[in-house]
Image (cartoon, rainbow, N blue to C red; front, side):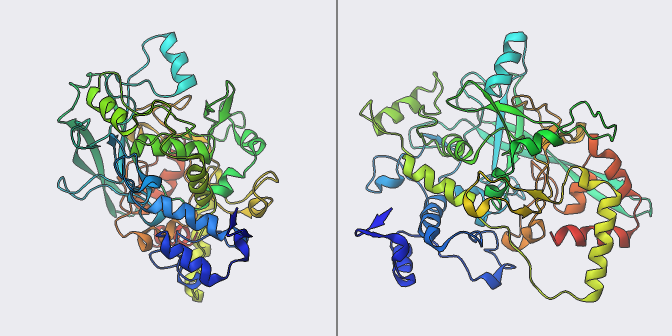
Length: 471
């Protein structure tokens, strides 16, 4: 890339700042403010300075809103006609976690509802294993609750709660809340009674490039679907569809590891969340019966050969940004008592066998971007699917992932969740307000680890949480 005939990395810092200002790019906060609101928005510390403009251009397209086409803002027009939000940052708040609304009057902007129907025969099962969730006629595989003027939205999300109490061995109790989702005001006819809803909040964006750099062979070695080593853990790979190829690929991104790489994950989010087409997903998300949606799409793109709304350059820029968001490190001074409590919590974490799924250390491969390659990282995940029990069953089946199976979420940076966004919540549907609530919801393969935590006394539980918050 060149600017005025000169390589952009020869520009002065002042020139980069001017470019950032002119394009609406957010320059990140200083490196000593990781505990503040923008802790998840920093570039990887080993990313070369010459890549800074690429990173900030990607940040601009990630952060700023898209608008209806045609518009004077040609680089960011094409929103909808059906969509969930108009900017990536609206869901991934300051590149962190989404949350559930506190009450029905609040918006659901950092939450999506996946739709699917159960397989009825071998043909359905084969289609699901190759292409993912089976769509709902007239609605597809994701509910879009916003729409451009003149286009009916697909429906509104409704939420109610039930609560239950769990008691620890020392007599302390914890109250859990379980969400129940439904769809009201359907815009294209009643949804079939067999429709399966699966709620997902936006996950944090940090460290994705490092997770992408973990070699397939590493994941294959960890996979033990038949539990041949008899440790009660049967993590397995979700074999998913690599767009443009007939070969299955290892899924590693998303709550059910349904996307094989960051570029496809980014393109899928543009399409499903904002209604924006790309070279990877060139067809608009209008179903055949959504005539107003189809007509609005035609009006915005009168030329049948019009280019996708997200150009390859924009897609590459946002993917690059996603690849290079750093995992924050809290370098605040630690007292001896806090250090001892963290050490105790670490041992309790190991004793409960949490590390069997939340693997502490992984070596990245040598085929990644140079600064992401051959690094020893501490993500606390194995990127594999695990059966988490009935209580966390998520309804929708995705490729080879069952309703009860979820990818092990990385724990790195989790202690800064509330610094980035005070309302950030945990687990796939945001039901857990605290880390301890998230732990107590564990079941299935994690039941034994969860039961171990239930036997801990109050001081031990606090030590465990203190350790996890330090990651």
